[in-house]
Image 1 (spheres, rainbow, N blue to C red):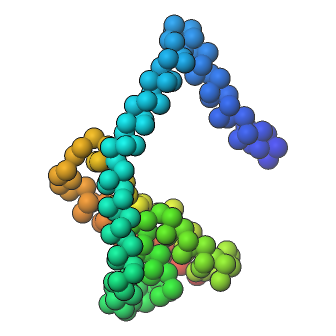
Image 2: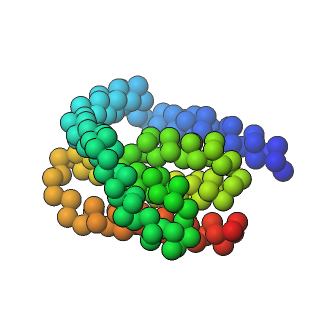
Image 3: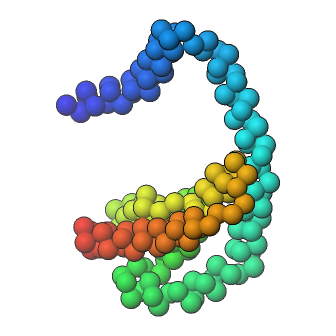
Length: 177
């Protein structure tokens, strides 16, 4: 059974690409021309969102370098301890909505320090899978279509992140604690 799943996982993406190409050919679509047009459009989108990404990355750098991350951690630390979250996970929880690569670096450090099978390592992994890089997603998606008023997207995304973090803590404690 495991061998069949491994073969399926290896063959799935190439099979999907071949299927799309055969289906497009059957429908009379000029595959190369459509691909080039899509790539050109993707490049234009990338150029439009670069200012939003640069602004977000600068803001994250200022937030971390200015010591705001540590101050926020000091303020929120008692709450996280109360819900059963180790204080070492707080930087991950605070950084995840801001930066996926920064959060991945923090998670890597936690897993290296405590081990992947430790409660902290497992909780960090579940947090990474249960939350989103909300500010990055807003910058990319809204920036790509030139939306400047996000209305309820930011509060909704942050509420979803908080719920994901709390759920990750409880689920990990329930399964492994």
